[in-house]
Structure formats: C-alpha cells, structure tokens
Image (cartoon, rainbow, N blue to C red; front, side, top):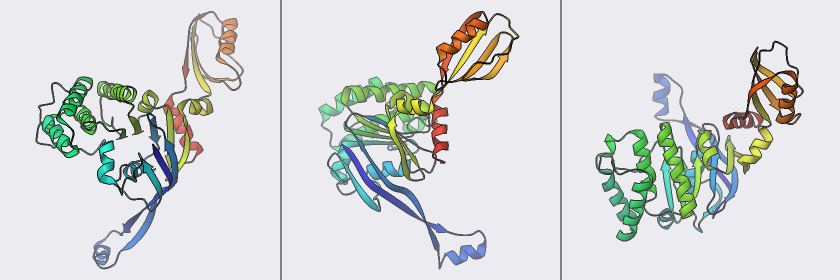
Length: 325
C-alpha cells in the first residue's frame, strides 16, 4: 500500500549574520547552506497497520509525512501509495487520504464546525447519503454533539482537535496521516482520540501513520515503530522487540516487616531502602524477578510485592542514546 524507496530531501536555507550592514548586504547577495532533512528513507507499510513514526525534533518526521501526502516533492527516490505518486497524481490521490497536522487547521475559524464539514463534503464530492452516514458516526464516536454548531474559534484545543480528526475523515479515506494529533490535549481528550483511532482502524481498516512525541500514544496504538534520526531511518520493528532489546530491566518494590539487614541480591541494584521497604532495579538478563522475590522472602517476612516494567519513554531515550541522536 505504502512504498518509499530511497527518498531524500534537502532544504536550502539562507544564511545571514546579525547587524545592519549584513542585513543590507543580504538584499543584494545571499549565502545559502544545505540542510539534509531526509537521507535515503525506505520502508513499506501494509494495509490496516498502525505505525508509530518517532524521532526527536528536526529528525525529519513531518517532512516524510509531507512527502507522503503530496505537499513536498523529494529531491530523489520513489514513493508509491495506493498506486499513486503523491505529488504527481495529487487531485485523485488526496481523495484517498486524510491528514491532520496538530498545529495546522483545515477548519474555517469563524463559521460553525458543521459548515466546514459541509464545505469539505463539496470539495471531495462526497454523495449526500454517504456524508450523512459518515457524519453521524463521527459525531457519535468523537462526542461532537454539543460543539458541531459552534464556531471553531470558540472551541477549546481538545474540542478543535476532535473536529480536525473528524474533518480528515469526512471523505472516508483509506490512509490517515496524524502529525502530533494529541499535542496540548488533556488526558480525557487524549483517551477519546486514541480510542477513536483504534475504532476506525479495526472497523474500517484505515491505515494510520502516527508521528508524536507522546510515547503513551505509541504504546496505546502502534504495534510497529519507525525511528528516524538526523534524516535517516534507524529502526523498523515492533514495540515488543524494542522492549526485549532495551526493556530488560524491571523494578521490584517490596514491603516487609521491619528489617535493618542490607540486601545483596544477584543481578539487582538498590534504588532505595528503608527498614520496611526496598526498591530494586532488576536486570532480567542476569536474573529473573521470581528468583529475586524468592531470595527476598528467605530474608524477610514479605507483606506486599509489586513489579513494574521499564517505561516506554525510558526505552525510547535509550534508543536515542544508542544511535546518538
């Protein structure tokens, strides 16, 4: 469905030093520097996948999405999506995709949300019956009943983002590009957006490409992760593989009857300790958690034990460090 091969893109940025003299000079002569945004990016995405596209700021995520949505033309490489070359077959291609940029709006600021939806219906030439069915589904699943007739400028950020997602789906696209869709949203709005993305993926088979800095979005939605850094694709695999590679450490918190004896357990390090509680960092490549708990129970009278896996944010940070990005 989505095939990128050797995609590269370089931006030409004007250089200018500070000061009035340099400002005047730049009117007649400018120096430029080339900044590579994408370097030989290649990957394939199958129909119905939800893929998390992650990386630090300036890594090239948004540039990739703009190439795939037909907004930018790459310097080299091939991109074929649904049988189209996005920047060449743009008119026909955009009917098949939906795009949401977290900091860009496709809604008209001063008119009610429903008027924007009606205009998008006409732009995409959606049949009235199909539009009504889709609109009812979007209103119900995204909880838009109370805001559908309000001007966009009166909506909160969370309300507007739900409307932005609905607007991108008015024409029933096969692919949905989401660039920071939950940026600035409160916890309730984030959960609502995530649940909706799962629903359209499961029930309608919509393929979703999600770029975000919120690792909870990735953990909740994506089975596959693409990591980009300094314009190069560094990792392509499942979230589970990431956990196996970098998530070998677990945290054990144990409460027990008062005990002042220090603990020395193989494969662990003490994060904190008191007479009635100890928190251990466990390297599961050396020892497993059941062995640690067994050793603890032989030394103290346990009251309660909890085990926590390494947070996905910590795993991603470790991945960034490994690739020095």
